[in-house]
Each structure stands twice: as C-alpha cells, then as structure tokens.
Image (cartoon, rainbow, N blue to C red; front, top):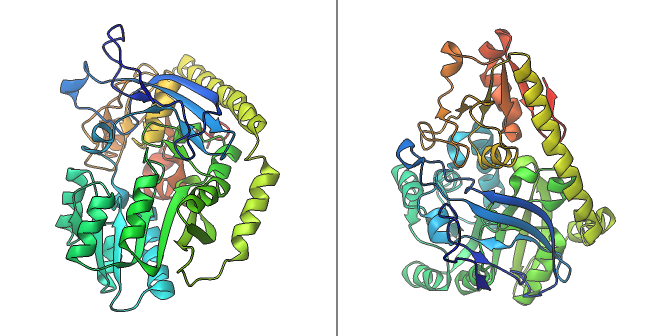
Length: 424
C-alpha cells in the first residue's frame, strides 16, 4: 500500500491510501476499469457552515484477475467514513418490513429461547428491534456514535465500536459465545476483510452460523448501478469471490438466496468448515454456475460495463438539460449515496437540480457534498413543487409513489435515472 498524500496535492483532496494489491487475496493483478475522478464521500452530507471545506477523493474501480473481487483502490480511513454517519436503515418502511421478516426467518431456522445473537454494523437497530420483540438476547456493535445512540434510545443493547478481534473477545468474555452473528450491508465497507472473519471465529459457537447480506455484483452489472460505487462501498461481491475468501479462513457458505433490497442483494449463510452442522445447499453451486455464464470472472465483462456506464451518464445529462431548456423545474428525491454519486459524476448542480427531498432528520438541513444542493423535507412539495423529480432512491420507488400521490395528482412527474433514464 502506498499513501497518496503529498505536499502538491490540491487542498480539497482528503487523506486516503492508494491500494495496489487486492483487498482479499493480496494479488497485484488488478485491472482498473472505471475511473470516476475526484468525488466527495457519498454519505458525507454537510452543514452549510462546512460548504467551503468538504473534501474530495479519487475513485478507481478495479477487478482482481486472481480472486474475481471488484474493489475501490482508494481507501479512505474508517475514522473519516463512519464516526459521524448519516444513513439510518429505519427511515423507510420497505427496510423495516424486510428486517422484520429477516429476524423471523433467523428465529425459526437457527434460534432457541436461550440463543445469543450479535449483529455488527447494527445501524439504528432496525434488525435488533424485532429480535427484542421475539425475546431473543441480541447485541449490536455499531461504530457511528450518533447512530448507536439512536438504537439505544429504542431499547437496543449496543456497543459503540468497530467489530474486531479484541471486541469479539470482550463480548465472549462479558456475555457468551454467539449462536448467530449477523452483518448486513457492512461487508462492502471493510478494507481489512480478514479482521472481522477472525473476530467471528473467536465469538461464534463451533456449530453457530454467520449470516450476512451484501449488494450483489450481478444485479449491479445487469442494471448498470454505477451509483453503488462509492468510497464507503470498497467491495462489490460475487458469490464466487466470497466463497474463495471464506475458504481462506476455513469457513464455508452453505446456503444463499437473492433478496430485493438495494435493487439486488444476496443473503449468504456460512459456518466454520469442520464444526458446522448445516448441509451444503444446491443453491450455492447453482449461483456459481449462473455467475460463470454471466461472465463475472472475466475482465471483458467489466470493460463493457464501463463503456455502458459512460453512455448512461450522458443519457441522464442530455435528458436533464433538454428539460431545463424547455423551462422545466427539476428537483430530486432521496438524499442517498446514490444521489451523491450521480449528481457529482454527472456534474448536475443547483442550476439543474434545485433541491433534494429526504425523510431522514439526520440529513434534512444539510447539503449534498461536492455539488452543494440543499436537502429538504418532503413538505416542500406542498408549497414549491417542481415539474420533475429525479428519483435517486429508485430502490424504494413503489413506496415513494404511494407516499407522493398529491404531487402526482397535481401533474408532477418522476425521472428514473437507471438502468435507462425515463419519465413516469
């Protein structure tokens, strides 16, 4: 690894590490295939007082020819990314319902009344809460202090820290070994993936289960979700890459299924190889076959994806500028990481997009980093509605359409930016 900080670096470029080896297997055989230039942190929604001091970071996406992992080469320190974090999972009903059903499945499939559950990257308690209602002893580990405090206010037991070997040993000593460990949308965020797996093996019972959800690389490629590439998402997993990684730690993925969250994710079920009690499901081999047929282990797939992304970018810019030339007013819906990436990558400023609507109090009153578009509450649609809303939270499209019927009935239209920009 080589630190890219230097004296001649522009003052608005933040600190990062330029990684020249694969995060998973340490191979130097990385193929860069998509360069985004300098971007702000996707989740770094800023206050008005900080508009002149937000930082940008280069972002290059690469494919490892050795283990097939897709990754960002510029690593921003976790202390910058996650100490003050503005994403709360409970904001949308869609995710609340998802995690309620998730807890019920875990309860039925793996748990008993005496079970102990640990979730790292537990966010605002969206999964811990239904475990509490099921009377399961559940503990969260969450590095963002502000988010951990939200979970605690909801009655969740949370340790405010990063999940690592020392924290795992502490939990095991103060509580007991875990029957079930969970991590959801967190294994994309970790620059040293080996550390949490070592921690899991310390804390997990020999016959225990580690279950996790990650955004799925195959869905990302098929629907051109370039807006899921951001510094907080260091890794983008195929099942094949995950299987290779778990083998390094004498663990195995024994089952997997697709779930609809975030426009395409997988839920994988794993265990310690020699002491786990669960049989290997045919789902694993079926997934691996599909991935091979889709070209997820071939560099040509990612070169084609990169070329297609640049076309998608131009299509959205062309549509927005055409509508503006016709005198139309445009705003956006969903101050997500997706919004940060698309607005900055396409260089759509407040001249083109007046404001971004969001439902989270953690983001309202702040600004989209880099591009500095204000984030406002949805009630602005009652007093100052635009002609068009770009739906950056298009993974919650059905929920948004149900919620904003007044805007629709008043003649408002939506722009869906991906996979093909279209007006509905």
